[in-house]
Length: 409
Ligand SMILES: Cc1cc2nc3c(=O)[nH]c(=O)nc-3n(C[C@H](O)[C@H](O)[C@H](O)COP(=O)(O)O)c2cc1C
Image 1: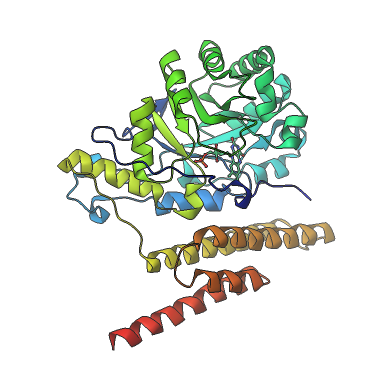
Image 2: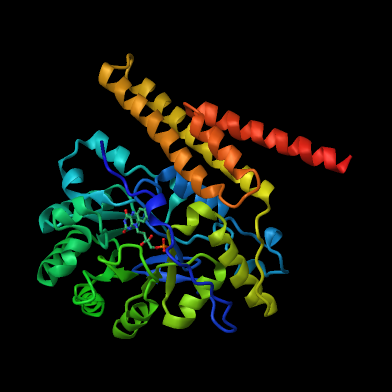
């Protein structure tokens, strides 16, 4: 079975709370090549998490208009589409992609029209396969292609992919050039600061990226050996920003709008990228957008905080989207083939298991610290399929609503 990162293993070690800096805020826009991103916020790629359903869920949860703003905000300064400017696929193996049949590729690279602008992330170490895969990504209509030089997972590093490549800058240069020559869409790189403290290469690597014609660089400010421990070292984002003219996207340990503005303040990065916070607080992008817009309009930055009821609504919406997506896939399959083959049935069963697995993973992140959260978590963990998970959420809601009514009476 495919081994996944889990959110559980990657909790924050010892999070630092930042206060809101007086003058800094996340920029309203960012341009990467010819792609305009507004606002300058990016949902980080997360294997096993950022599939099409999660990406659309986050974009919807980030919706932000003047009507929902907590301050009197000019329409022009709000983002009517979404507070999350750019979304990315989870990493996809270039070797796998270039070997796959057309139909399977489509499944890996599934996205919907309302996901633009969207970037597809690739990993691998073979320049030709990576270039071929980048072409596939471009032909599939993605707005950008990204190269992963940050993944610390052993199975990826063992093939010299992800952060494994950080020890071989000459090979990185060959890969950069091969991909650059293969596609015309903007090409970006996401990397860590180095393999370990004895091998910090982020500034050199960012300059190489710029020299090879890449259009932006996103830095998760930890080494491979750091994994997810300690604090992200934002000073390296500042060092990279000082060294290159291409846009620099800062990443690591943003949990609140205050953290996002503090990162911009400390590093002058052109955009912020957020990973682990998105599943535990899907409103993070909307909150940043609200803060930015209200600060712009009134001089005082404010943002809404979700109520517990909002949180339960949110979990129900996400789970319903997951169940609907499976139903859509099954309808499409039924339209293609008159009868479901045995291997088709195995794939279906696996998809249902994956869906329930993701629901459980999400529930464990999303219900921590919420009254009654542990009871709901238990019910979700005992559920056998997507419908049963939805029932559990529904029942929980009803009990809560009844309790609230009883208090009002
Ligand atoms: C579950 C999980 C899966 C991840 N998968 C990827 C991936 O596919 N590609 C990648 O570049 N980074 C991946 N990352 C790293 C994140 O994109 C991000 O760099 C990291 O979580 C630090 O940002 P944060 O502090 O905002 O979470 C993953 C992280 C987590 C927690």
